[in-house]
Image (tube, rainbow, N blue to C red; front, side):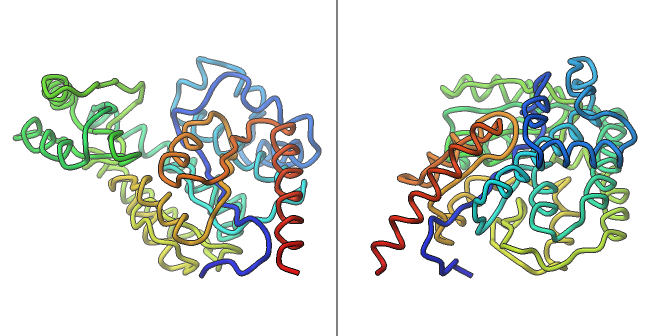
Length: 323
């Protein structure tokens, strides 16, 4: 599955919920490809996604945040492709996996949007029915974090939600269990940072959302993607539509194995990582996971143009060396 071209092998990283900020869609209006994507997105959802993304209060809601991020992720990708960047693999963090599927043509834009709408509604409702929260534990190994879960979660719901880096783990569960876990983590020398989320995502508390998400995913047509996708659940590159469908359904209650996904992309031969969408958190994680890789956050058309020019120049050098 390794790319066999004489050019830098590019992996696109799509951020998920938590990366949003007011005005994040505005930069993409300055590029024809970005504006076209945002216009089509707004037509599908029935409201102006650019305008809604300017409203901090609206972005605090799960549905607007998830749809706004999806729109910006895909606008960034559209601009990168329009600027001529070759793509060899992709991965998306939680919600970002939906952007990866649309970008690769495994799922069409309308199906991707409709699925995310259903996902946001189901997760929001599950968060109200079974309240919970999430906390980032910094400076603790996955093994130590698992032990914290076992001790603090006895008789309650507590799980590892994100394995972002060797010492950056996110826990998800009931508020009481998270509070116990944070205290225990601090006692053991780690830092704990409570996340501003509307529920205990990627934990058993999301089980009420699972069937609705699974039902809407089952109605979407999945095709063979144009390039491999690394799903959150398995952290293994695949181009199999049925595998992608199954793992996407399971994602809502399963941990995001992000560090393993980045290392899998490195093993695939990816030497360039471009974070397409708001923020630069995934770019920072990629630098840690794949030392020596070229990593660029793409938050505007100017970023995309600069990365595309750098990529073309590097590709030209590689072709000269191959002669």
